[in-house]
Length: 120
Image (tube, rainbow, N blue to C red; front, side):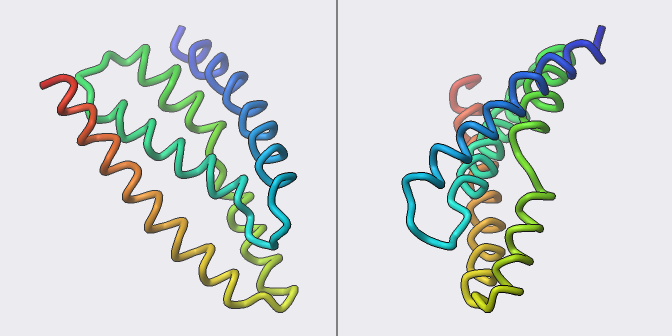
């Protein structure tokens, strides 16, 4: 049953990541990968929120492992950063790494704090 919940969550998260990435990138005329950045930060916030809740394994499997695992994307982040670097946008590549790490950690911390406040 847990594997099915993970698969269902991933089946929702992956297309949402793709559609969100395309929608965000189409609205920005810049080299910076705003779509990937956005889904990774949003996924980090949601995973932090889930981690801060006294949740059961079914919710963690569905939303945490499945949905957030498919929504966020380390491989695309890595590829886009390398592409920026190879295209000569080295500062943009560095900013992508620094901003993604800082924003991701900030988002997961904030998500956990919100969950703890809500669960009180």
